[in-house]
Image (cartoon, rainbow, N blue to C red; front, side, top):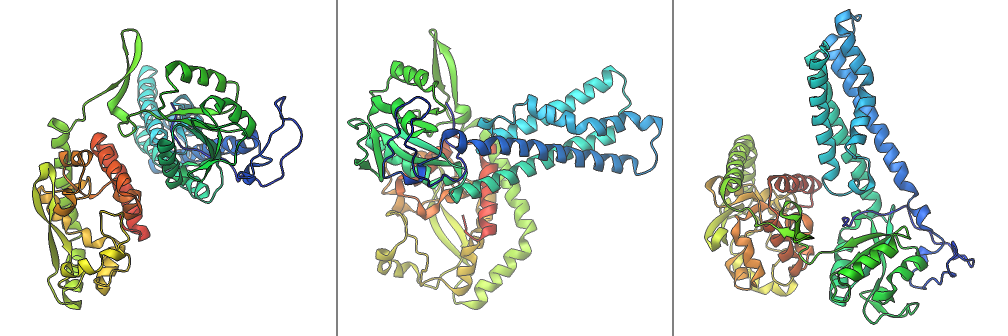
Length: 511
């Protein structure tokens, strides 16, 4: 099963060819897909090999820079003595050895590039393995490698490689959001699933999928006048392979359907092997991923085993210790900023510096959440008059040009600076740095069964929901984000969200 996430070069707008394609019947392009005409799968995938080659070249340059810096720091620019020759040889070979290690770790395989953390994990793992190998080889053959050189060169090569790969990925994501480097996809399943997955793919445009249509129960091949959710219905569930061949589809995303059971999916996979399309299967438990899901043999069958979420014990103590320590250090570091912002709030409008509001935390316990005051006094009493103008998602009130906001408050909200006092809530133990959004009691009263799952963990200053669209998300998507965080929590997940939060704050989009 692959991860939803790649596309191709800008897809052309040329007229379709009237000739046959590779021995198949003549393509009949639906009028709803004019941008797809004239572009074959091979042409759309041409950018991939160029991207991989560029990554390898940049990795070589990163290792060369690291070797040069380490050698100059350790030995300077003076002549080479006999004792320095092993280190000089290592510096010369490091770029080749480095790329070889990345190749052995399979960090150049397309399925690990572009999206997800696996690419960075493999780079880091290759660096650790190379460091261990250098130590073992130098000890076994009594090589006089300067430890200072190794300690500088390998970590620096790792950092440079990770940074350059992140930069190349960010560049690719920007191009994909503009419609470049895309790959075509069809969604196979029932109406509700097709609509939900289509909306999710549209939101995550940087993953590079352009959905050109769907195959649904009751769909008829070549009857492209039928549309659903803005997509042409290109065929039925039995027409998937023919649709792939006819429109040269790159990706087939299959949703859980009673009609597509195990044998049917197996046959579909076999038939798609004769095309260039990749097959993506959406499991029924899409919100439970990562370390909680394992494939284990049971009674001779490979079954998915779903582990319990680890919300107690050592992991919980580790998270709380990290949260409180980091929050306390953060308060000390930004104390001058807190004082300055507090003075700006207090001196420019009537009312207190802080705004306290009762929110619901872990296990349904309420606590006073702190924020810098960004509104005029009595703003709560004015809410009922503004509900009809809410920009939120039907449950949460949100207003981009809220008339209750002060001039300083608008600045604080733009850069999420009004949230900084919540560091004191983290130190007290009411909140975490990362977690679900702390809700109001009035919102909790409208929760369904699934949403109460979020109370198994502490609410956070930032979280997956906040960095994935905030009030631009529907209420159902907000619930899904919070439940996904609770089900899949890890420190790595927290660090990823904190990194995204930092980027959102620096861009002025808040979090």
